[in-house]
Image (cartoon, rainbow, N blue to C red; front, top):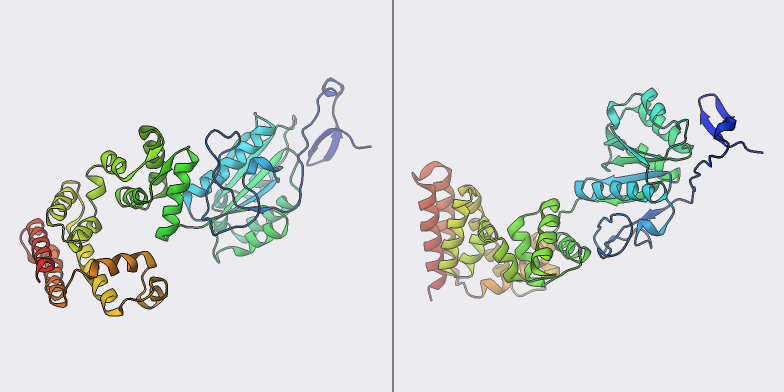
Length: 384
């Protein structure tokens, strides 16, 4: 017969008579789970969801709410927003079973072995608890061994979430947790444009909206590469537009910012839009975009045209490795370079080189130097 009681340092012991009516919560220990959590519509019930690129599939699961919660969770990756969402999803799932489940967060490297054992020990009343160990890749060998030991036999009612940045540092800890049956959630750093675009589309769908293909690129250009800002902007646009987000809506709500980057100025220049380029340049200057970044963007745009133009009309996917550019950038440049003559590109090269020197100390007025460079490059494109 197994007593209903609490497991402490002295082993299991029966409950006193006055607690005999209490039914202790028992956590289900399932098999090892590895999964990718995808977006669900906002109207669906359940814990928060996280995102991973569609081509990365670790398992068949669509939501953490559809499965029992493993008592040991391993969150691997460096993408902060996705890591936070993974932890929030675990906490929400624990609170589905017990709304009073307590959340405790620790910087793993700041714990001692004794403090770790104390935090993972069951309480007298067996309250549910979620223990989050952040930056576990920073711990020493002794504490890593203690984490592995504690995770092999977690106390009932306690969920241990180990957050690891991935990579080679303290990889043995992550491997041991995987081998021990921890549920694994991967939150890889998003670096590619296509993944960022996938994220924007998923965010808009998650809050119940739709976004036009052209609006995705404009939003990324306006907001930048930070996922937290992209998520906030996507949610706000859906709320403000009634759910249908198009390019006009993005430009309306992000007026100025959408035209404030150096790359926006460069895009207008290579397209031959003199008025648009000057307007974008002035927005960038008003909003404090460094002149050096604008000059670098102009040089990069001209350099891209020259490289793609010299490569000929090849398949962008095949040229990507040779040219060291993403296919979407090659495809875009192939359309733009048709309107440039070799002599015009040479003039644009000279203007880009000159303005790069000007903004780095040669010219007395870097802003005027940029405006003059934009004028020269647009005039070069117009030459026939």
